[in-house]
Amino acid sequence: MTRVTMEQKRAKDAWEKAEEGLHQHGKDYVNDAKALPALIMNSGLMQVMAFLEQKGGRHATLGRHLRQWLHRARGTPEDFNGFMETMMQADSRRFQAVTAEAFAWLRWLRQMAAAREEIGQ
Image 1 (tube, rainbow, N blue to C red):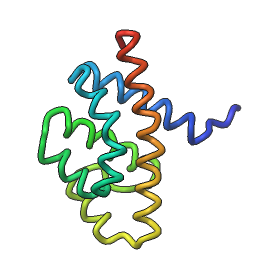
Image 2 (cartoon, rainbow, N blue to C red; image 1 turned 135 degrees about the vertical axis):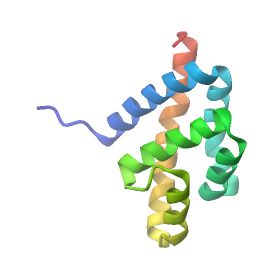
Image 3 (cartoon, one colour; image 1 turned 90 degrees about the vertical axis):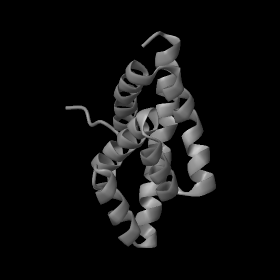
Image 4 (cartoon, one colour; image 1 turned 45 degrees about the vertical axis):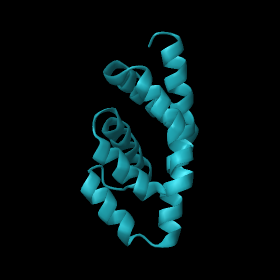
């Protein structure tokens, strides 16, 4: 039995989420996925998650996709309120680990969303 690496898991999840995001929101989802890492770098993970939730629509979809991945990879709650409460109470090591995982997954999402857009999903 072949052992799947964390990178492969991220890639598979991002591939699937990119398909859903493109199907629901088109090119706007791709553009938002490309911009999200810089936004997190500038404002922080919690602030960006709150922004995505508040904006709704495609932004909320992107936030939900990221929370779903972080739930699988780092055990954070999938729901917005639970995620925010958990992160507010996290020690700095856990907070940094969750943020690092968000960046690792987003690197894949950016590429997968752009590739799916290019091939027409």
